[in-house]
Length: 279
Ligand SMILES: Nc1ncnc2c1ncn2[C@@H]1O[C@H](COP(=O)(O)OP(=O)(O)OP(=O)(O)O)[C@@H](O)[C@H]1O
Ligand SMILES: O=P(O)(O)OC[C@H]1O[C@H](OP(=O)(O)OP(=O)(O)O)[C@H](O)[C@@H]1O
Ligand SMILES: [Mg+2]
Image 1 (tube, protein in one colour):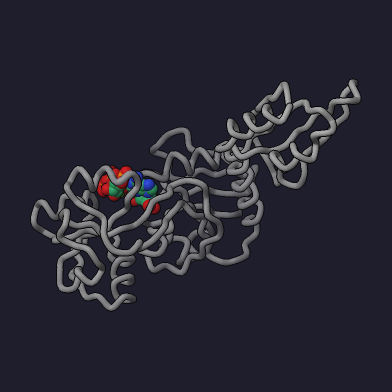
Image 2: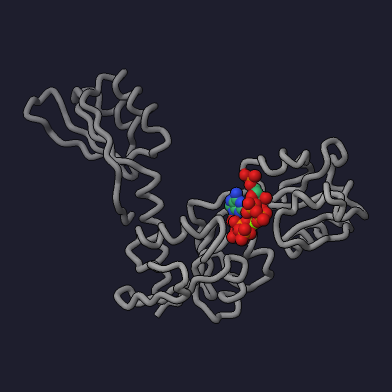
């Protein structure tokens, strides 16, 4: 039985739970439930604070979990990153009052507020900069205005929170983060199945199926526009001058691809979503 840690709150929780649901696993009905057993899939889910998940998995109390790469590194836990998932992307950056800080070295001797002292401390040490870290639980962007720190280091997604506090990003990127699947060991019974199922959910959301009719002599050019994963499916039509083509296409470029196919001479271009996939 694979024991899986799932974020119970915060930015990663809803998408993580949704992804598990789409991958065919049981999810909780009531937000007060902390443990959900799923005997049909031989797994058990533990709903935990995202910040604690790496600790549980690193200590082998649980087998795998979903958390953020930044939280994994901050914890110093021995858990391993088993797969990157397709959500929770953020960067981890330094920021300070507009115009005050320009380079990493400007942090020498100053107070830096963060909720991620493990991550930031290790980064500063690697770069030979000595700063005083001020550990806060959240809303660290307010620390400068309120006088408890001179600069901050925090998760940046759109950058809106920093801008509103009059803070500018400076210095190198501390980390590119995303939600990740972590595991206590490189190999575990059921881990490959879980990874494949989650990958299937990611593929289903990243790709669509595209069908179109095409003059048969244009198939080489059309295949270059929609190469599919391995190769497009080409089927005969009753009219021998035409063929039907089916290929997976990245969702992001669907309209561009349809324009190119239409210009080439394709007609009846249809797009349908993929509900599940195993690649
Ligand atoms: N816009 C975002 N804001 C905060 N965290 C984000 C964002 N986008 C992605 N994340 C990721 O979510 C994880 C933080 O989740 P966590 O639940 O601790 O924080 P939170 O969403 O700020 O909730 P809380 O209010 O409990 O602190 C990190 O891995 C972080 O990189
Ligand atoms: O770049 P943005 O799109 O503005 O997002 C980043 C902000 O969002 C998160 O805060 P959250 O709302 O989770 O509050 P917290 O700081 O108290 O955790 C994070 O800690 C940043 O403050
Ligand atoms: Mg937060």
